[in-house]
Image (cartoon, rainbow, N blue to C red; front, side):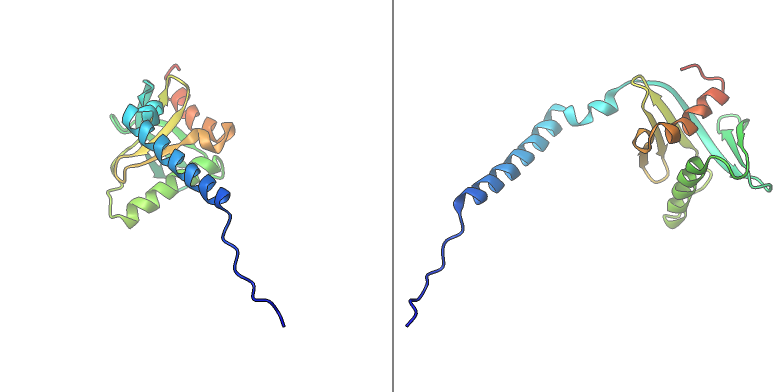
Length: 151
């Protein structure tokens, strides 16, 4: 005959540890939200800002225009600047899906801590360009140089 085995209860230590971790994460999020620590990056003052429009050219290039006076800041030659092209095309596709006008300019901002942010006011989307590495970020920072903005 075999003795009936009673199920052993789940160990309490892992349950307590998991509950503590979840509680601390929620508490940290709450404190960050209430004190503004979570938004400290957004509070860094901008050094420079440009409102830009991007237009495809018949030769495969892209005109980058200052939306205030429609002057050409630079021309992205065909087959170059893949990251800049892909980023702008992705934002343009999102605008198309949401039926947002393509005439609304994008806002490129460089902050005092040298972060670059691309904002689409049409969709509300922010892209922190630093997240894509220094080479890709440089493609957008070059636009400030091309526009004659000293950083």
